[in-house]
Length: 82
Image 1 (tube, rainbow, N blue to C red):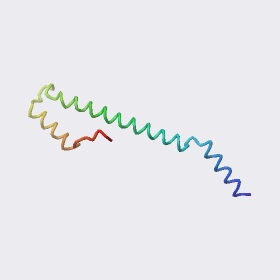
Image 2: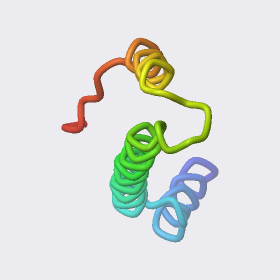
Image 3: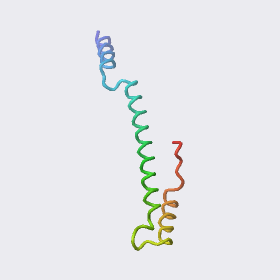
Image 4: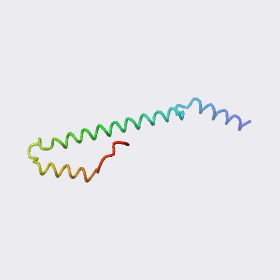
């Protein structure tokens, strides 16, 4: 009788659990989509900042190029398909 009660309890927990596999799969897909959108937004923002470096007083063409080159070397090319 003990095993059957445990089995019933496990089945009941599966049904009432807030972590149902389908719900978690949907949540994970949504989380990944949100993370992907945030990365895209961050990259666009960084590109705008790097494009306007010459507008900063004291930053000329050579310094702006050095900063851009640093970011290219540090972070490499970005694959937006991910």
